[in-house]
Image (cartoon, rainbow, N blue to C red; front, side, top):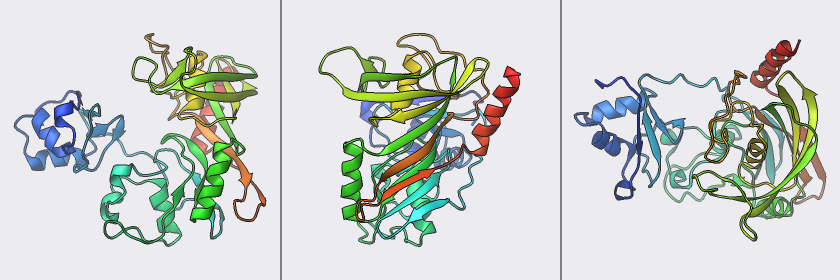
Length: 325
C-alpha cells in the first residue's frame, strides 16, 4: 500500500455478502488480490475492532473494516494449554484466557480446521485438547461442545461447556432461571460502593450501542449486585454478582453509573456524550469471571469453582495500588 494512514470502511447493504478480500480491492483501488491478502496476513486489517486473519470471511451490512497504517502486534495470549478445572462425559469447565472469543461465529461453523486456526476460539481449542477432532467436511456428525455460556473476547475467567444434549438442556434451564452462580471481578474508574443495579437493557439505546431504557415494557430486565473489594486512588476493585446474564450487562451497568471498567473501548461514554478518559493503563478490559457454580445437570451434585485474577490484571492492580501509596 502506498497509503500509510489508517482507513475505516463500513459495509453498505449493496456489498453485504462479499468477502474481506473483495471489499478491500474495492476500497483500495490499484491493489491486487495478492496485495490485499498480504494486508490481512500481516495483521493490518481489523473487523469490528479485532484483528482479522481470514480474507475469505463474508461480511454483512454495517460491519466495520479498518486498514491499519502498520501491523498490529500479536496479543500475548497463551493458548497452547487451556486449564481444565473439571471434565466428565457430560460437561467441561475451563479457564478462558483474555483475547480469544468463547465460540465461533455461526457463519464459521463449517470451516475446516486449517482455516479455524487462523482465528482461534476457545471451543475449538478445548475440543483439540480433549481429543475431539474438528470437522473435516460440512455437516460433520461427530460430537461437539455445546454452548451454554459466553464470555466477551477480552474477558478472562471460568466457562462451562456441555458435552451432551441432556447436559445442554439441564444447564440451559439453570441459566434461564438465573440459578447459576456467576461472580466477576472488575477494576473500574472512580469510587464506587455496594449497591444493586436494576435496569431494562435494549440492543440499541439510540446510538448503535446496547444500553438501558426508561421506556416501559421495553427491553430485558438486568440485575447486577455490586460489592466493594478494595478502594484505590481514583479506582475501585469490585465484585459483581449476576442475577441475570444479559449481553455486556456488567460493562453497561457500570458505565451508565459513570464508572466504566478500565480498558473499556465500547461503553466508555454517556449517551451522545464525550469519551471518558482512561488513564489506568489497563492492558485490556479489566473484567474477570472469578466464580462459577451450578448443580450438575445429570448427577444433581453441587459444583463450584473459583479462579484468581490472571497476571495481567494483577499487575494492573499492583500499579494502581502503588499510585494510592
